[in-house]
Image (cartoon, rainbow, N blue to C red; front, side, top):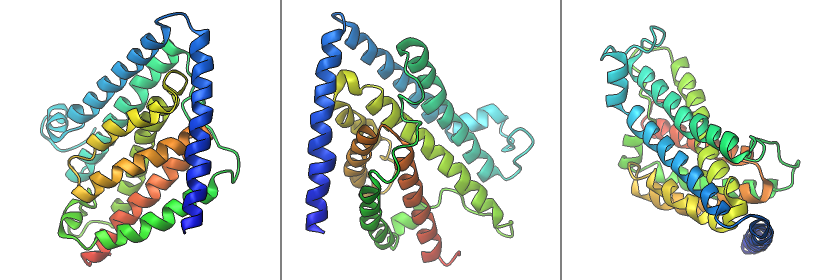
Length: 266
């Protein structure tokens, strides 16, 4: 384990840091004065607006306002709990992907590939993700024994007598939500700003990512700091958010299933 961690430090941190700083210096040298600051400000403002839209528009109050208090989403989802969570996922995708993504494309000429929606080279960093999963999954199972964890997860509580397939519908929606999370924090903030900020883009993205967890259990909020650093480094190295998305979804699914199992609901 110690050798694997040392290898990760050299391969993931030191090498990535050196490459990012070289690219940043070359990029800034080619820009006119003030251009980098305008690009950073434009993207940060778009991210702020997207976060605000998802937080308030996707809240219970936002859902009730937009549905007139009916708890029914477009006449299709008649389960109030699932309808509200579906609304939240839709607002997350709008705030985390659509709006800042359009700003990045139209104002900064950044493509979806530039923002991490690309398949990385096969097997290049697979061992890093496997090591991360090997560490996080057992820890998640241990923490799932706490009452705070079981109170929080899963977000969707299956109504009594309801078809269990609804739970899997929620897990699919939940996975889609994590694509929005990875796109915003690792795609836009890390890859979108890597040429202007270099390695500092990874550190910048960790701050709002940690704050996003303030309504979660304390241990999860603390864990979001190293998790955000590792996911940011992996995105910076591979230029892709897709493996990080897979890692995030795997951990989230484990959290939900472990909580349900602890509560005797599986």
